[in-house]
Length: 369
Ligand code: F6R
Image 1 (cartoon, rainbow, N blue to C red):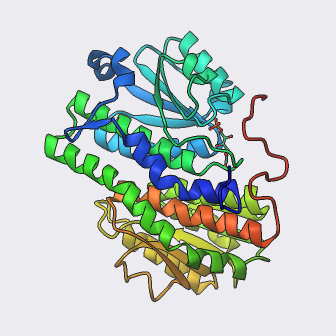
Image 2: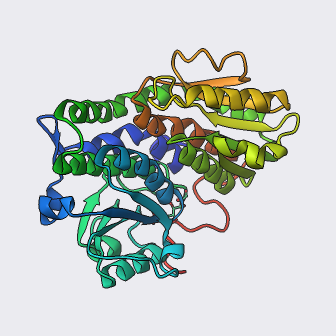
Image 3: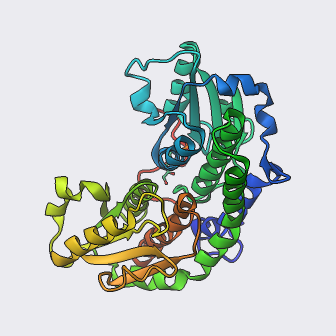
């Protein structure tokens, strides 16, 4: 079933263009997002939502963090993201105007399931984003938006992650239309950017050789840091998680703006730091701030590996390595920037002779607390 691939993970990383395309398939009609599964959620109900709480664990929670930026920007609804196991034990404030969106590849994660049950019992509406047809979490939810990534076998999640972001973006665009928070042309522009992602992912995959080399050079690294901000922040967290679970290397992700509040003390000569660089075209003008973060850590001896969009020359004088991703809408970059980080973790794991598909101590589906 692995076909010619050395691992399921390598196969699943390569399937990401399809995971995104298949999740979009049938959900954009005449340039407009339609989510037939949510017909039960009438437009009236979606207009009535006052806030959204996303609950998930691990990589799925990072997908939720990425989507928070997009959904708030597009649909102007406050979105919070919480780990399921924290949510369910803290007496969260819920009512019928709260929409609880759970994200789970397996649809069986015990903490997420119990959190969904809790939310329903306390009057919230629940939607599940799930990759497994008929799993328990979607059955326990009021509505479900399936991701169509296909079965994910490797323990570490890759293609399910990009499919989760895709499904949440579709939901966010649907919500924006129903709530009238974006004009038609802007909405159509975002739909178009989403539809370009599969081809852009294929371009990123074609550049994978550089990442493999980097991983081989770094096979005895003991610690790696990841920085990002805005939608790049959860990608930094995801890059660190992948490296921990696959290569058993100490790794931490930070919001780049936090550097001066503590983490910069970790920087010593030779410390490898991946930096997810925001697009210079982003409306918030975060690019120069991250470039100056790069200068600050570089001045203290960090070895900087920048993930930056094509044509971003400002990073060149300061980065030791630059991994390029194609030009995409700033909100869509996380779908591309995560790929080199997944590959880096996988390649490093292989370089160390570890079992990429079955990392120690982990199970694919966590059905116990
Ligand atoms: C990391 C990973 C886990 C899962 C988490 C949630 O690579 O795979 O962090 O994302 O256990 O699993 P699901 O999505 O099945 O609820």
